[in-house]
Structure formats: C-alpha cells, structure tokens
Length: 407
Image 1 (spheres, rainbow, N blue to C red):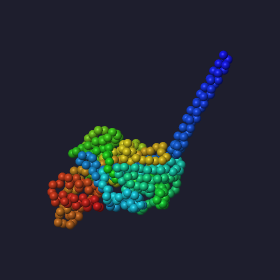
Image 2 (tube, rainbow, N blue to C red):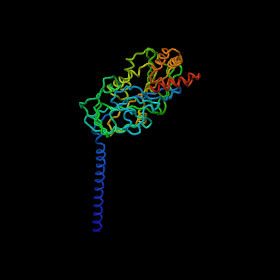
Image 3 (cartoon, helix red, strand yellow):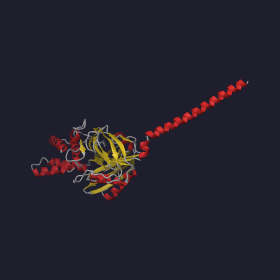
Image 4 (spheres, one colour):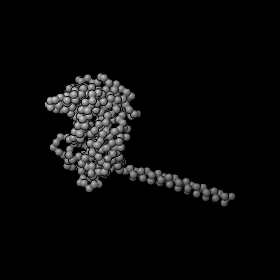
C-alpha cells in the first residue's frame, strides 16, 4: 500500500515536471518567435520611413470613351539634359528601344517618389511597369525596361547636397520644392553617384484605365470601369481663354454631366485641385509642387477630365517594392483624359483643306495652326481620317500623320 502511494506520488511529480517544462518551452518558443519577427522587421519599425508619390496618367478619349493609342513626343524634351532617357542610355541598358518605336494608350508623366526619415537609412527601391516601358528617369538606375530598379540608395535627411541644374526652364524643377530628404543613388554600372530630392521616372503603356470618358453633344459621359471606387473627378474646359469646370464626387456606374459654363477662374480651380490632392494623402508642399509642375499643361486650351486613380489601380499598374517597408506609403496618381471636341476637329479639318492651296503662305499658316495642338495633333488627324470620304484628302491626312508623328 505504501509502495503504491509512493509510486503514485513519483508519477504525479514527473507529470508536474513535464507540465512545467512544456509551459516554459511554449513561452520560450513564443518569445523567440516574437523576437525573430521584431528582428526581421526591425528596420521598418525603427526607421520611421515615409514615402509619398505623385504622377499623372495622360490619355486621349476615343469615340467610345476608351483611350486611343498615340506616340510619345520625339522632338525637344521638356526635361533637363542630365535626365536619363532610353535614347541616351539604350546601349548601356539591355532591351531598350527608342521612343520612335513606341505607341501606347497612356503616357505616364512625371511620377516622383519622395522619402522622409528621422535618420539616415539605406533603402532598396523598384517599380515594375509590366504593361509599359520606362522612357526617362533620374537618378541613374541599375536596370530599366518594363519597370525600373534603382537598387540601393541612401536617404539623407538634412544633408547639404549640390543638385544638378540647367538655366533653361523645365517642368522638372518644381518637384524639388518640398521637405523631402535628399537622396544619393550609386548604380552598379560604376558611374559616379547621383543626387536628387526624389526618384523620377516616366514611361508609356497600354492598360485599362478605370474611367471611360466621351462627349455626347453638350454632355460629358463618365463611366467607371471595374470595381475600384473613383472618389472625385474634375471636368475642365478652356475655350478662347475662358475657362469653366465642374467637380464630380464619387463617380459610380455611368454619370452624365453638362459641359461646364465658361465662367470660372483659375485661382478657385487651383484651390480645389490642391484640396483634392491633400485629401488623397499628399503633404501641402507636395500638392503645390505637383500643381506647379503641370499648371501650364493642365489648363491649356481644350477640354479634359482629371480624376484620382484608385489606389488598387496604381498598385496593379505600377507594383512597387521598397525595402525596408515604409511605415507609410502614399501614392496619388491623377488620370488626365483629353477630349477631342467638335470645335477642335472642325478647326483642324478646315486647315487640312487649306494645305492644297497654291499659296505657300496659306499652306504654312495652315500647318502652323495644325501644329498648335502639339502632341494632340496626331490623334485629331486620325479622328478626321476615320470619317473622311475624299481619297485625295485621305492621302493628305496620312502624310500629315506621318509628319506630325516624326516631329
């Protein structure tokens, strides 16, 4: 009986020991697991890294509202000469082709990435563009094609650096007017380090945009495509120096709005656009920099729709990888849809007919009037070609399209 009791006590003692050991083991495992996670994510947790991005997707609405294909400009660029391009860097980077060989539905114009950090930190940055091609960028990158990989760069808050500059005006410089930290990028191709206050890139691509836009008489029809919500859109028109705009909130389904009355002013529009960008997550100085960068182009003669791209669309079109992962990542891409109005089409059509005039002066004036539409001349001419019945004028239109595309 006594032996039985002793045996039971021994067994109970061993069970207690095993239970305590198991409990301690679980706690040790849990602690190591948490510590491991903290160690792997330590750079992101401790860095306080914040990254903000803005940029523009520009397209031209076809008759059905879907974006038309067009070409990137081949003439003089609006960028400083120190900016890298596929024409200048094509021999040094694999698989690049010249811009003349590219046609696309969307121009990705001037996305810039800003970095904020309380301390100096090394960061790896890569942006993929699976349905497009990168055409310009700065600073230098490790690889460029259907995406851009800057490799490792150093974020240097408060550092005094000499930024590259040229005396000629450019859309490029206003993007520097923020509190973002200076960056230093040294590529693996043994080129000297390059410094800037942001990462800049441009490109062209063909992909589905979340908003279709078309003109139906005196009405603008907006149709949301896909499931992602579009929080705000602006319908803008500048005709003969007079401007008008309408703001549309929460575009869902199909929405029809009358063309804006030309009784607006730029100052109120600027304030509305700034609030739209800030509400999307940009800092005030970033919103000011974006508006200053594109003010001349956004408000030039013509009719267009601006809208905030859903974040899901931006992440799908431009997947981004940042290591360490930032504590905050804001991406504000603005869609810009150009509308070819009947007035624009009739004006160009009239000038095309005058190109057959025997007077050289008349022909020169007509060509100058056609070219004043700049990068939109080619899509307008293609639209006229779709309906033109006269074979001689159709031949003239084809020649013009080739000439404008080569400019």
